[in-house]
Amino acid sequence: MSGSDFHIQFLGTGTSVGIPMIGCRCPVCHSADLRNRRRRTSVYVSAGETRILVDTPPDFREQALTFQVPRIDAVVFTHAHADHVFGFDDIRRFNTMQGQAIPVYAQKETLAEIRRIFNYVGTVRKPGIYRPLAEFCEIAAPFVVGDVRVQPIPVAHGDGQVCGFRFDWGGRAVGIVPDCHHMPEASVEALRGVDLMVLDALRYVPHDTHFTVDESLDCLRRIGAPQAYLIHLCHDLEHATLQSELPSGVDVSYDGLVAEV
Ligand SMILES: [Zn+2]
Ligand SMILES: [Zn+2]
Ligand SMILES: [Zn+2]
Image 1: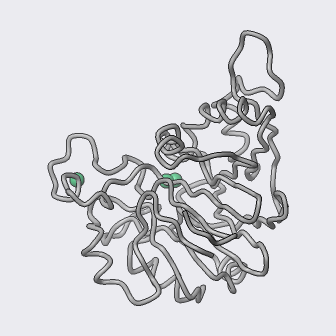
Image 2: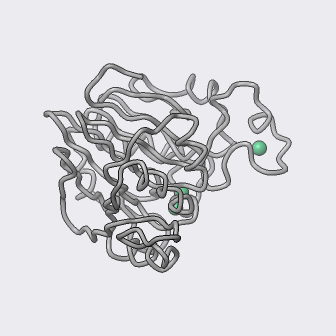
């Protein structure tokens, strides 16, 4: 683990089906390079004493075990697609270990969808019932977790209201936008000045709801971050091959990678 006071860890870097993809015989799905093994996308943000989890994919339990996630002060959701929310039930262990409900932040539509799917979530422990405990918080503007400023960044990703986030702490900032096929100028402006940017890059071929590698690189140029990582990758992208094709300052993320902000 990094010694930096402000760093992120990639808990998952794959697209919705995960890599390897069930039943696929392609070289990436059968690669011996573990960097090609991609759980569904999630990022763990550590800033000073504050720990924030971005999304709870279906792999969340295994991710928390593999990467030894110690604590969660807040969960922030980008949107309510299955690959970003279906591990939410497993925050129960953190409720038990921390002895409290965990604050959960999302925009209006996303929060409504999460509350519909997980309609059994409570705020206090009832004897004999082991369910997640969450304090749901609807967000429409920047908010604070511990001493971290968190700003929702609206982006286009299929239908519905979707966002990424900018995290500011100690004069430095990281932007994390895992699912996006178009970024409005106002959101590019809101991300300007980040020291590190994490951005969707599904594959080389155009897709209706995700950036291609080229579209992601274009967007990164607009944002102007000195360091960036591509995320939400599908099996068309082989780690070492893609890495060799990228400009300096842009790298391919992989599960478990720790990046200093
Ligand atoms: Zn996704
Ligand atoms: Zn494959
Ligand atoms: Zn999505």
